[in-house]
Image 1 (tube, rainbow, N blue to C red):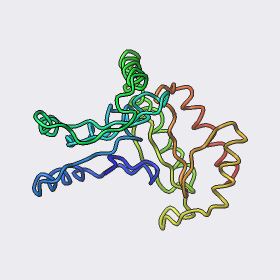
Image 2 (cartoon, rainbow, N blue to C red):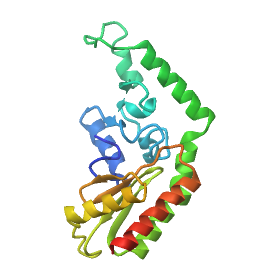
Image 3 (cartoon, rainbow, N blue to C red):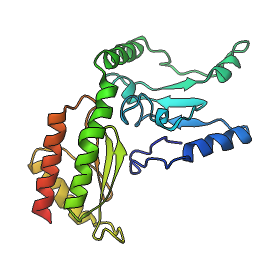
Length: 223
C-alpha cells in the first residue's frame, strides 16, 4: 500500500491505521510492502513517510525522490529476514539495468547532499511553520476550501461549493483556478477538485509564503 497516497489525494493515514495493517500482516503471515515512490525521501518531512507512524514494513519501494529524478531509477528495500532467505539460494530474477552504476552514483550523491544540507529537516520545518498554518489560514478565509491536509511539503487543498456537504467544485471552476494561478506565474499541480501544494524539499520560507500569497490572491479574484 502507499503509505501516504499521493495522486489519489495526499491522504494521511489516521492514527493506528498502519499499525493495524502491520498487526494483521503479522497475524496472517503476510508481507507488508509500503510504496514510498512519491511520499519518501523527505516529502513528508521524514526520510520515509512511515517513520512518522512507528511502523516497520517488510519491503519498501522507492524511485524518483531518492535522486531527485536526475537519472531514472527505482528500487526495493528489503528487511533482513527476507534478505537472509537468499543467503544460500540465488534470487531467481533480474533486469537488464539492475545495479546501473550511474543511477547508483546519483543516489549516493543525492542522499549525501540531503544529509549535509538538512533537506529533510527543511521540509519538515516548512510544513510545520509555513505551509500547514498558511493553508489552514486560507481555509478560514475562503469558504470554497473544504479541507486542507498534509505534512512536510506534501499537501492537498480540496475545493468545495459547501464546507458542510463538501460538494466538490466542478471541472470548469478548477480550469479557471489553473489559468489564474498560471497568470500569476505559479505552476499548479491539480487533480479532480484538489490543488496539491508540493514544492521541492529545498523550498525556502520566503518562496513558500510567496506561493501562499498567490493562492490567496487568486481565490479572492475567483470568489
